[in-house]
Length: 304
Image (cartoon, rainbow, N blue to C red):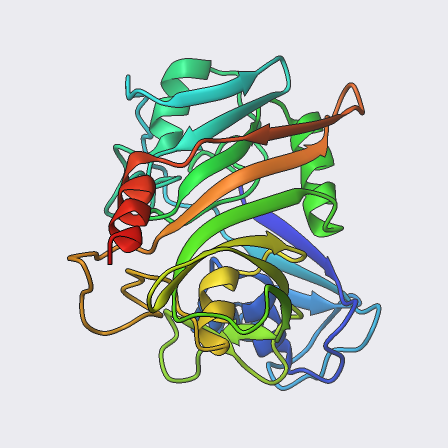
């Protein structure tokens, strides 16, 4: 079944339609969305517009996405660390090397494969067969807490909390350099890099992004910090830390081009997750212990 995506423009007035959509729908390339616009599969206030159309506040954009190619996502008995579970949600502590959901060429070994085995048919269907139950994502090489919806009602409520920035998300990271201040805020817009479309960057006209950081421990040439997300842009922490001159230790994309301590994965852990439960409407907060790979690196930095 084809999917209709509805977007109401709330900011970035004056941005080209194709650029605006590529920033809002980051699972799709700009060229793919341009093609949908050219094929009249995108309407603005009920009318077909060109890619050059400049969006306006309160524009009602509808994007028709064709039905995906049928794939068979297999339930697999993969061990997962379930922190909490009830009739509506599951909180999972994801390992550093686990991919969250299948993608072309990689349909096995993911968190979704494991969830399908654990939950059987009890997962939200809002994100389709490739991402059932997945409300938000973290990178393959980022460990830590994720929430999964077991029904559509819970999924919708959690998605609204995300959109309105009403979910508390705190990360722990190891970064290059030392800080003059004990805490700070990074506010810089994030969008697709013009040099490399696979990467995100600080760009004029990008989506508003805000990150708070707090120093937890200082080492020689490195710092252990806690980060709180006020927004949830793709690669937000990694891009913001690079922007202020403190890229994540081990980050193969936004960090140093040379391997330090033999690392090829960013030192980033989603440690705390807090939100209003979709049914009980009570605030819940979960905290995960730092994984061994993280504590081992802290011990190494302390000895330098």
